[in-house]
Image (cartoon, rainbow over all chains, first blue to last red; front, top):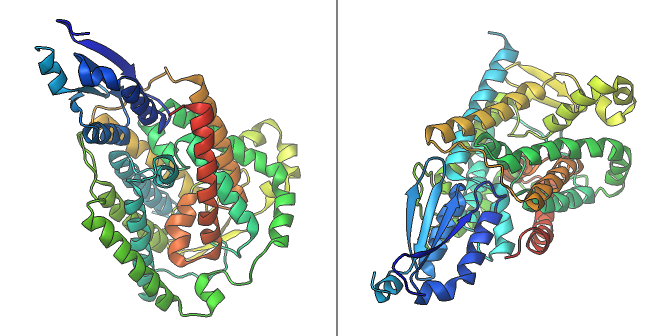
Length: 91
Length: 370
């Protein structure tokens, strides 16, 4: 699935009842784990719950992925990817 | 300034401070217990245990110094009955489905959560459901009374301070072990995040100040009954006056600020409880609102799956109902009752665990598939 433009899956869990935001995020990570490992692929999560943000990042780290948190207007965006996979895709 | 105004202002101040602390740390009492079953590890549990441990120490020191006076059983914590265990179980189910407890819903609502608002409406409805149930539940409660002792030291005929020392000693080593494993400090990726253990220390201070100055630990749920009763009074005063539960004024406590005993009840009138609880509720919502605006994170998201809102509503109804069955909420029992070693609170705590387990099963099967 390597391509010039990164393939990105957007997931918005803002406003979700706790801990649904965390559960949905973990489910999506699991669903896309093959793509995250082998392809030029990125997941962007929009989250507004403090605890979920910390725990998603913690879980992502322990799974061996890389992530970047961006402070947006009224929530946070967590980009999840794998640097190694991006390098292999020549990006 | 008269006494009532002073009580209102102090409660409002405690609520404001508590609202900011809980919002910054996302200190979810419900999550601390739920996650034991949901994720088989609970990042907030060490901070909750630290909070209970500190409350034991602070309240006992305040009692021995004469700043806090109580004699159990009283209106604060009564005699143990099986109904409290059942209430705790319903509360456990409710807090998982609602995604927070009676106070969690307040700070989340203050930061703009739509589902938390639905939970608050549910809690008022749940308190209302209890009104019809009250005569039967009261009967059952009397029939299932387990002991004439109100606290664990009374039951075992032990000195209160000695028993607390033993419990504190054990809990201290548990917390120390967590600390050494690095479990007290949470990784943080958000701006303005307050570590939950710091929040635990601050909430313990708020609890003991409330007990010493206002005359009771933190509690809010009777006011949900009151809010419902005010609405009912508007539509049908005759029905309100026919309901036994809404007529009782059985809650009595000593108010140091008023220097007298105040009586209160769940009916549609302003009394010694509403003077404390309504400002506390308003303060928590306002504190969380101010905190979220200051962090530029106040936002309302309307795109919430309907099933989650239904879950929040049912959870809220169960929380409101269980708070009257128990006959108080988790904040009252965990932060105030367990530090006094109240048997009623220990039963409630015991009920929370099977409840949280059932709630977790329902959540992951019906609401969101993991």
